[in-house]
Image (cartoon, rainbow, N blue to C red; front, top):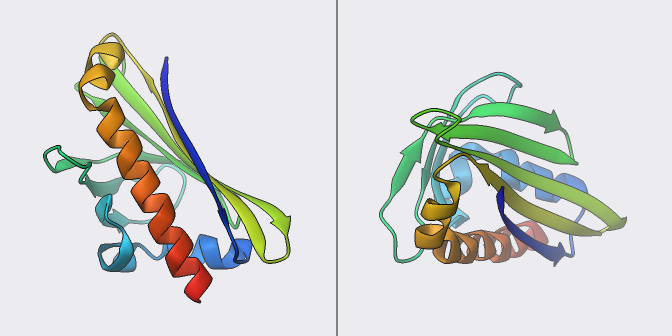
Length: 144
C-alpha cells in the first residue's frame, strides 16, 4: 500500500470546515486541486471528480462514497481499470482541537499491482495538490 498523508491546522469550527468541504458546487471557486466535484454525499453513491495535480494532466474519475460522518469524516474509493490494478481510498478527517480550531487530515491509501509504479510518477505532484487544497480550505473556512 502507498499513502499520501497531509494535514493542516485550521482556525475555524469543525462545522465551517465540513460545510466548505461538502459544498460541492463551490469547489471550483476555491479548490485548486479538485476542480469539479458533483454527486450526492451519501454512502454508496457515485461522485464525479476532476482533479488537477500540479504538473499533471486533468484526471476524471467516478468514485463511490464510503463514509459520511458530518463534521468528522468523508471518504470515497475509486478504481483504475479494476481494484486489483489500482484503487485509491481518499479521506478527509476533521479533528476538533478547540471550539474554533481543528486538525484537517487529508490522505489517500493506494493499493493494487500498479500502485507503486503510478505513485512514482504522480505521487509527489499529487501530494502538492493535497497541500494546495489544504491551504485553500483553510483560507476559505477561516474567512467564514
